[in-house]
Structures are given as C-alpha cells and as structure tokens.
Length: 287
Image (cartoon, rainbow, N blue to C red; front, side):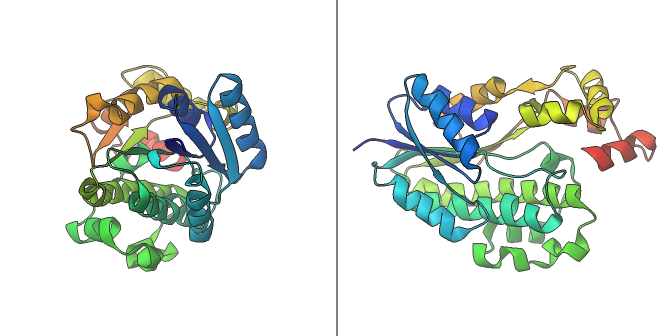
C-alpha cells in the first residue's frame, strides 16, 4: 500500500504541483475529460511517477465519493490537490455554482473525512474572489459553514441575485476561501492542513486561447499595468503550493495565498483602479 495523492483537474497548474510534491506517492488523477486525464497520467508516468486516472465529475457528490473510494484502494490519502473548475467564459451561472462552488465544498468536506494524520491539501481558487466587495459577516458565515447539501439554496446564490457569470465566479471563489477556513478547523482535529491559492492569469493552453481571442488586448493591458508586468506560470503557482504542502508550511492552515503579479493591488490602488470609468467597465466585463 502507498501514500496517495489525489489530483482533481488534470490541467497545467494541478500537474505542476503534482510533479513538485508527488514523488514517492501514488498519484490518482480525477478529471471529467478522459483525454486530458490520460495525457496527464502519461506525462507523469514517463517522468518516473506512479499515477493512474479515473473519471471524476466535480459537480456530482456521487462521482466525488466514488473517486475517493477507488483512490483509497491504493492506500491512505496523505496529499490532495484540487485544480478542477470552470471559468466565467466557459459555463453558465448555474454550472459555475454547481462546479466551482458546490463541488469544491463537497470535495473539501469528503477528503477531510479520510485525510491521514499529517496530511495536507491545497485547492486552487482565483484572484477574482479578492476583487469583489466585502460581504456581510452573516453571508460569509453561510458560505463557510452551510451544510453542503443546502449551499445552492442560499438566497445570495440564487441566479436572480447574480449579475452575470463573472459575478457567479467571484462568489464561488469567495466561497472557496471561506470553506477552506472552516474546513481547516475540522482537518486540524485530525492533525491535517488545508489551504487555498488564488492565482491571477497564468499561462496555460486555455489562457493562450484568451490571449489570442477577443479579450487579448484587455489581458495585455492588465499585464502592462500590474506590478509584475506579465502573466504567471503554472510552476510559480507550484512554488507556493510546495511551501504550503511541505513541512516548511507546517504553521499555515486555513489560509489563502493571492499570487497574481500584483493585479489585485493595481485594481485597488494603481492604474487598474476602477473609478467608474471605461477601464473599470472593461475589468468587470472581462476579468
């Protein structure tokens, strides 16, 4: 039997973290896209890792439970990476809430029930959750602690209260951060840790499509006007995950790390700052 790493979402960020932290473990990859999962496993195995894959639909509790059950046949789950999800340009409001918000909450909850003592996890959130105005303490607590089966029934998450897919995505990512805080308390009882990372725009195949599409000029403007002056890379996200998931990060749990090249800072206090002008409209409509 082996120590098991769960990786949900076989994209570039999840893969970069798995390569950083997955040595000596059985890596079980879950993804709804069979081709992407198979390709990820092939890359990992050709690089000397021990990995396998299975289909996993983040919007389905049944699928999540089956994924965890099958992974545990290899051994105890000691590491967990969630990099699955959809973006505002990929899905409807309902799908974003079902996948990015509800699915992530269920995944954190269910993995937390089986994570080993000393285990650690990280879930990928987004800079978008940091740009939304503050919510009330009551809503924050609802997002953090509402039973997962009732989450999508919350009044604040009803489609009539969400302006567009971006707003739904921001709410989902804010919920991710709050759920991580609440779950960290439960994981801590087992001697385990869970954190989140909120990346900015990271160069992946999906991002390249955006750069070359109708939003390309907007993204170039964002890069030019943020302190870093460029997009990030999956390996830079993995650098942060490596800290959070290693013994060097043993005192870090229930936290969210924003790594966006300063785009959020520029949004609040720099040249990307929205002042009711055209640039603010562009940011709200495209980011």
